[in-house]
Length: 431
Ligand code: ADP
Image (cartoon, rainbow, N blue to C red; front, side, top):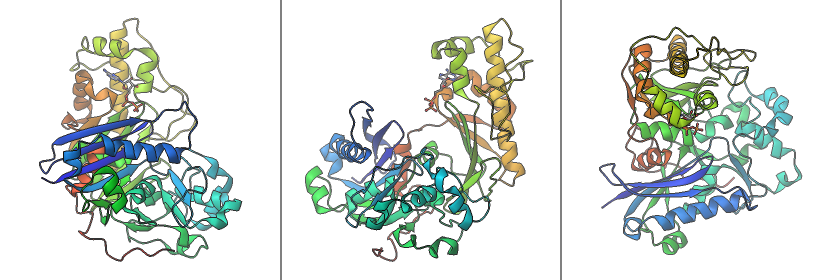
């Protein structure tokens, strides 16, 4: 039988899921990142990758057809000509790029997604000003480097990871303002996500008893992988993540960008994945209630009756989407004595912001919403689902699969979207 392996490198750990041709999960493995003992991220990631492979049953390893890996977006490495990192990786949320932001602004078009202190390009500019820069040969994303450990090819990436590097996902090339730079030769060659690049190396095949013909494909980012896992695949279908924050993702026929609201679009084959992230969400619920209370009190709410309370649930001032106001204050008043009424007010207010968020995306030109899948800690709350369905006016369902590793396994199988050709075109050239 053919099996497909998706490997997810998220913020708190790594996970692998193997699926069969019917998309059924046949094996799973996890590797939590420990923050105790000091080890470089490079060592931790390599150990995690190899541990995940070892945890997959040998019978499945021997029949693996394809592997794809997702990493956290804008987590990057600066490597020598052998792929050895010359410095600690710079992680997704590291804002040191603020030091060089003016230099990025001088070359990139206004409102471009690279114009952020955490963008991959800002991180490369930061390295550009360090002495080790002269020893560098490859600038890679986390997913690119991990895939290199398996297939041995350097300088390969995908257009999801490369968006914050400045790659033009519409024209499928690097823009002129990037190709003119002296650091351009360090940038990876970009392929559609899920493009088969090379079989695993002989060494990896022998060491882990893996099918020697197993192909390693280009990957994606962790949040796109989670979207792929949900099953949403039609224009107008969306995934709301009810985690610590409220994150909306809507599959659209049109590409929309709006830097004021922090909205940008990823390419998904011939469609666009657009969305925004609000500071409201489960972190506010957790501030007032334990998870057990959330479960118990929610059952006492009549979800069909509207609450009289209209809050803006935030833990501190400031919001980007669906309202852009860095000084927007939290609004949690008036607070009724009855915790059931208070919770209903909170759940309904977050749902109202979710609905406003989807309206905002549509106002900016996205395909109208037809169905919402749900992921994150709040997805199990049936009362909330009914409230949200009332306010959103479209069916709201739970995602069957929420694990990013599952979405990446689908990518390896080329189950979704016409992302990738069967064989990578131009063999990649070293810079
Ligand atoms: P993160 O974004 O941190 O990964 P999770 O997806 O794990 O978050 O979700 C955690 C959030 O889920 C918490 O902030 C918590 O308030 C919320 N949550 C947990 N249980 C429930 C519930 N029964 N109803 C609504 N929200 C819940």
